[in-house]
Image (cartoon, rainbow, N blue to C red; front, top):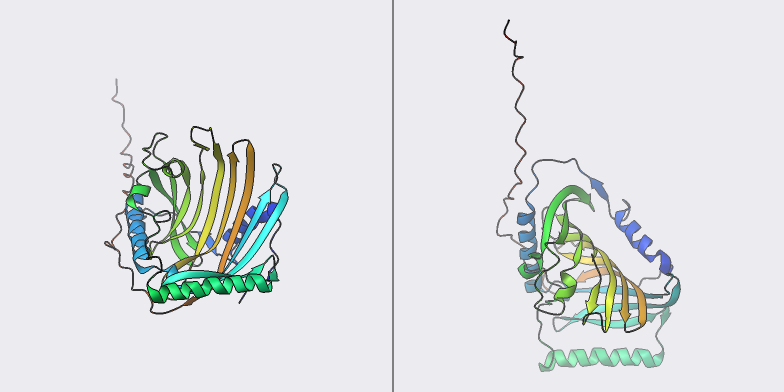
Length: 311
């Protein structure tokens, strides 16, 4: 089933995705009463790392077919719409690797030439899967949540909410310092991220996140350019098989390359997930008993009043 709804205007894209993420109709969210029984941030983050490793091993997204819509809005310096690209893709696993086929451009069917080109690309993917020429499946290191990534941040449990009818813990994340080690070029970017994440209390999946750059990222000491702004909001959907897949993501990106400024919004939506082939195995965390944050020491009860001695 293809997406047919008209996309929102560019300057309303951010409002649309944030509103959808927080409205009860689309993604029910309700704050629960504070308790002293929250797990520690360290325990939750460790379980999230385990869950991410399991997702990589199971190649979750490569097990499903789905429809993906990608709206790209190029904006002026004042945030007005300058250009829009709206693409809809049908994705399906071919030889264990997800392959996307373009089916709609700006709400219109492809031309005969474009459709032929997409069919040829898909045929090549099938041929590669049967002849052994297909690229091997490897974990996506740029998207995985591992110890190297999480150790850069200070996490704190600040609340407990219902997200899509399920209990989740809300954590803040901020860089531990402004002078974190840089081993790869991308570390300059990761080291400056901060925001909030929602961790499902049962599955230990990051079900929702709101993350942004805390300061701009220069490129080659600002000589080539800089990433002035980056914000991403995403949410995930829990499928009947017990896995979570992103169903909505919004990115706001402002960059400078030499003397040219760029401001682009990306709105992505995934739907119609269908399992193709065997279901993944169940995720089993190393520890199912949460480490609890220490409760504050009780205030001693006041003793009886002291009667001053008579002179």
